[in-house]
Length: 376
Ligand code: SF4
Ligand code: SF4
Image (cartoon, protein in one colour):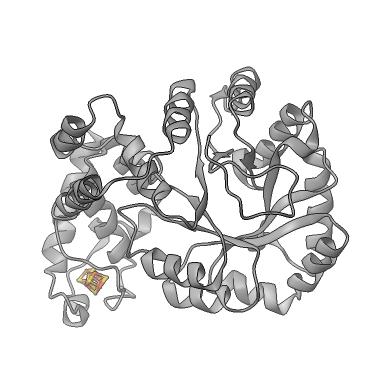
């Protein structure tokens, strides 16, 4: 198992493979405790020492499950990470209340890693307004928090502002070989590396997408390493980056855990030739988009309520990854119906604003047709 040597303030070094506790197996809509315990036991026995949960995961039950299962092990032999749910925090006192509840749920007196969850422009403004950082600094001084950081979902400019606002102990970003220009991206990764802030990676497989790519796009990977899973290439791309100190994977099945253990036990970075194969794969996938929407939002707001960039994003991701059911879920369950492509009344206002000169009206018709045919 690979370990990170950056956190000398911890008794146990964090393993570079971290267990993301947001996708535990479920039964009848609840966490399947038997299967989850088997997974966490196997991870612990195999040297995984970083467990990442959050207030929101599994409707609040992930923290409870992790607390129940992990508390049978000596507390100083593994690291716990959880997060302050900034989107629902209403005051400094509310943060005090939630933090106390989290200690209780996780059956611990401290968190090795504590994050401000999902910082974006709005949540960061709340952190400053409510003076949340002085509270978390007090907890640090009392030993209730060992390392303080934040997880991030917004544009690079916001990332730069937050990353440079103080000396963070770590930060958590979405990063993988397809998301190099999204959110923090390559630029954000390089910035925090320069600032000496260790990085925890989330979504190394883009929610599993990079483990299940269209077969014709992965021929060269399979030829180069017949025994390696497609997922292992994404993990090794991150292992090759020395400031990716912990790479979180939300493992639901035992074979996913075993595959990751194999990758992180070998701990092999990509060689130059393999780097090129991954670069070529990313180029191939990107070339499969249906249109060149960059998500800039200059076309917004649409008077009919259509979320133009969101429709195109889901559609283009389907072009790249061919993930039928993920696409159907994203479109029909994860986007408000009123924002769907078929609400376009063809006024044409958006097309005048689009720097990519996209035939938005025409493409929205194609989006709608594709989504309805996928749904079946
Ligand atoms: S053409 Fe359609 S998508 Fe564009 S602004 Fe008008 S209603 Fe909205
Ligand atoms: S203006 Fe064009 S490129 Fe920008 S989000 Fe709208 S459709 Fe996409």
